[in-house]
Length: 434
Image (cartoon, rainbow, N blue to C red; front, side):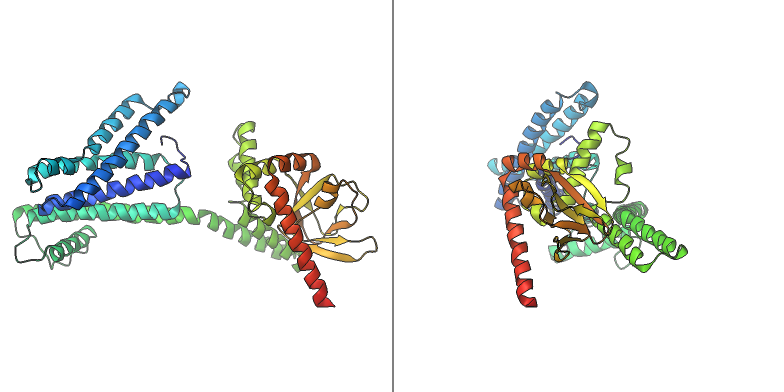
């Protein structure tokens, strides 16, 4: 996991490792602070976490060997890998199991301090997270919240060490009270209802107060940045619509045309990240741009009914073969008598199917397709197809279509299902009208 991007499986594995690290970061300081006796469940959890860390260590070594096959400029640093591996090995030591096997369940605080070695695993987790370029907003917020709670927990444990638990006080209640003190002090609220009783406690309190200004600002700043990043494209969209609205009013654009323009932009922003996608990839080499364009097309078509249940490989082939076409109201897309050597998928807009006598037999909308019958049966077109609105179509040639269904028969099955449903809906509508 040394790349900037990770697969879904790697993301799940990283999540499991983070959970193990967070548990260790919470449990080890707590056990040390209250000097509790080792429990059987802790031994089993220790074995599980050590097993996870060992598996992750093996994976990291294999991944490092694979990355060493890359060009020298792209290879990871051997020195950095050696440091991280040393950290991993130390974190894998099952101290709880060792204490249990040697009858040290009630070991002194000095020995229990060894269990804190596992916390150095946090260094690697933070390094991996920082190396990732795209992290979902909810993940960032969750990580920020968990990190804040762990830090508060650590400060709480130190406060308890300075002001030990008295025998008459319940441990849970005392921990909550100390946690409350840490929160109020770190956030600079400081109600003063809990105060230090010793010089060491006062020095520690001043340190926490001083640090709290930075920590509080850091947390608030990061949360604000996360929301600002997620809202950036939404803000750009609002600005675009505002500019369009001003443009329409200034040039007295008719309502019909305004509706068509806004409908198109609504379609565009639901299908793309922004209207700046082409510019984002414009500086890349042509081969990379073509590859990225395929995945952009996949995003456009994957939710269309005819492609909804297709495999990733099928979608990629279709996206590579599609040619985007645009038509205005009244433009004829298919003429009666033409050879059926292409089919169309409607990305946006409405088209009408018109017979030779001029009667409209169907209206097709976004996600529907036409032209497949003549293409499959090698016949000529038996109707005109005309754009009713500004229409965005995706053309698929016969040669590409036949090649794709040979490799991915599920596409043909999907087409038959959608066609059958369309015919059934048309028949119901006709019955209702009569």
